[in-house]
Length: 416
Length: 118
Image 1 (cartoon, each protein chain N blue to C red):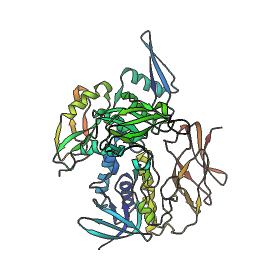
Image 2 (image 1 turned 90 degrees about the horizontal axis):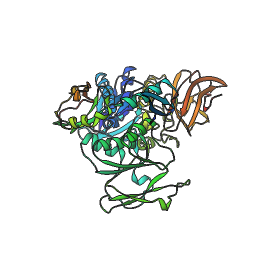
Image 3 (image 1 turned 30 degrees about the vertical axis):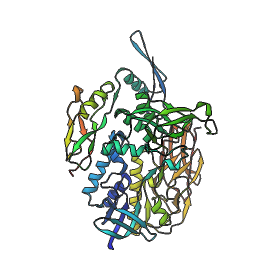
Image 4 (image 1 turned 90 degrees about the vertical axis):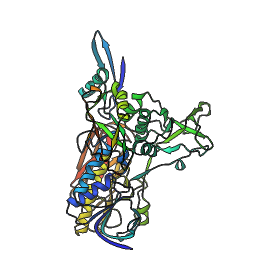
């Protein structure tokens, strides 16, 4: 087995991994290794050809591929060592990785610190209660996106979309432009899952109907998809039989949520948060295993890539401090306390001795207007932001500084 | 009369635009940016154009492209037809102009990534 030693190993070459590797180099780490299982860097951004990326960071509207290219170019220029077509099989709590590829075979990589950046995976047909047959032609929105935008295939001619998350909305427009007839988008919840701008620019622009409180109640077709039955749902999310309607289609696109990909993290004994489904992290995005950090969508599913990059840079700075012995492995931690309309926050913990300035990201439980996000420590304010309107699909970010004795409470509540 | 959902900020105002005696009457907005948004949507709606173009000899068969500015919404379909007729040869560099002044709109179409040859 090939033996490799690194200062920092980054697992995953998508937006989080790229930003983490580049930042680690910028902070002076010597040997930084970035491992990616695909044949090239960029991750999901390479299939996101639409614009709307980088509004915060670059102050302009870029496509996902452009956003990735910026970081790939920086990564190449900064001397990060990159292994593509390489699969990480196991990570241990002692910061060792086992990986393999077709040129080096098995590798044992001992690292000063590890940054997890595996991203997330789409929920599949098997993970939702989809009744009926199991024909071909049922696939996730991300698969459809990769087929159309990267591999040049059209996976169907008439599509139904289940779920109104942003990828589903983006694909509704994309499929329409490519000549696939999109019959409609069906959303189980009474509110859309995606951002308003996507509802407007992807559905309303192309007269694609959005059916709220509705679902696909049956899948028809033996070998290939022939159609689906759609139906309205009552307030208990039960199918209203009388509203059932048959829709012929040869493509059922699932946009039913994302789950952080944490198989490797679990193997390393990392504690996960049931809310985010990602590792519990401290203010530097370090997990409960000393020297193993998590960044981007593996830590929590973010709505904006700008936040993904930002979280990765925080993690990289933490990792560099760790290998220099400036960050303790066993510092006492305190839970960040939540109040009011906050569903979850990441980071979930802070070191009791934490003094600097850091970014915290959160999602609210329910839509609200005229709200204030308030951070307090020992009764004193330590961060604040005003929001005219908040909603679960849009993440909130707030800079926090001057926390005393690890006491931090974050609340989102109506103003006044 | 036309109704729009404003996408300038998450407030998502419903804005209506009416033409009365040759003047635009805009209601429902809560800020100046919303007013401008609705006015533009009514008089001259524009969108960024993103799609893919065929490439031969590359590590992938398609390359994503993006317009350098917004294109009038009613020209999008014709622009797409032009782009679907193109065939590029790898390698293609990020930012390379794929189509200059597409259909006389004054907008260029550029490659939004680098695509290496196989």
